[in-house]
Length: 525
Image 1: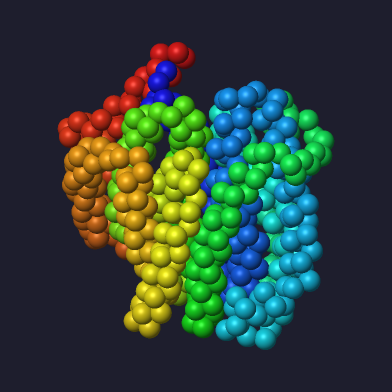
Image 2 (image 1 turned 30 degrees about the vertical axis):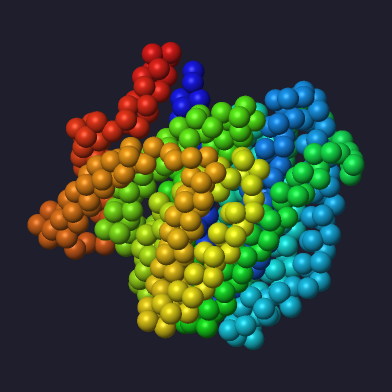
């Protein structure tokens, strides 16, 4: 099977695992919105959870993974699997030491961190956020270690189980508060503490499940530090620009949270709910694509096969367009009904519904851009070039801050979400421009042709869906969850059928590749 088919196959593994984990993530968010709503307590929990997650990218799927995977792939391809495993254990051991120190430091400095990130919180919200931050900071150790383990597994083409493992964390988050609420009539603050405990419990489950998978690729659990390893310097050299780039991006998170804390209570929670709903398709397809292509891009680079790299890059962009354009249209039309079906119960009210939809709609405008950023940045990382993504990330963050300050005054929380989408678009365009200067032009003609074709079909199903959902004759104004579910189901089935038919009529090549994979699997069975 050629590399193009491997990309589709690997994407299907990551996407299916991620989809299942995102479904449990949705269950987690249903519990969060039911028990905490869009209240000041939800804001406090959201800020406390954001803090360790801000550092997660540095030691997981961010700077370290981007610097580590190409080196690990090189050693695995040019030396031996045993040498690669030894190098991997070296990185893991060093990471354990660094993460433990960071967790201790974070717990001590929690009040200072909260005061910097969210100065607009009330006194009671600030105190609760500080306590929750101290509880949640060990999550950085758990998820940081888990993320680099997943990177190792991905190099060995183990995709499904690692991408599914967040489901364990999500269930771990839900279990304590659910069990406690069945036994006691807990207050909002007590529920927030139990959610925080659940995050740690879930993080332990996720780390253990991925850690045991390392055995299947030959790893043994023993500490090993070799600071003189020649490839370690190379990783560190490439990681420094990634750290700076991540630091620049996290300034963006800080500014978003800071500005949101100055708006009405519940703004931070609503932005997070909307962003997490947007992350469902982005995680299943966009980020999953980025996970699948980094080892593939690194393999092409290790073999010095630029033609294969450009082909895989073109295929990746076409697949993102194929998936994300229709999803964007459906979110804009059906987003409010989707949120009502999932979240409109418990403490979550109509005001929270409107705020969350506003965030979701404007975040979703950046779906294609966010997906392409992940792909283009990983192409640079595979080429062992982390400086250009760092510089471009800095430009994007500056743009985001400028648009935040401008649009926030005009549009409130919608402006904060829209600024994120605009900045992602600028970042994707700049990455593509500089990437083509390094590897040569990719097949822009095919990408532009597919964009026009897919855009026409996606626009058509969006109009059809809007006509159906606004028709009082077909869908009278009822809000029961059963009716909402049936209405959305009918529209989704209709839209999907029309979309698939349109893709076949327009003869889009990316679809044929997917059909061929499905046919081969059916014939094997």
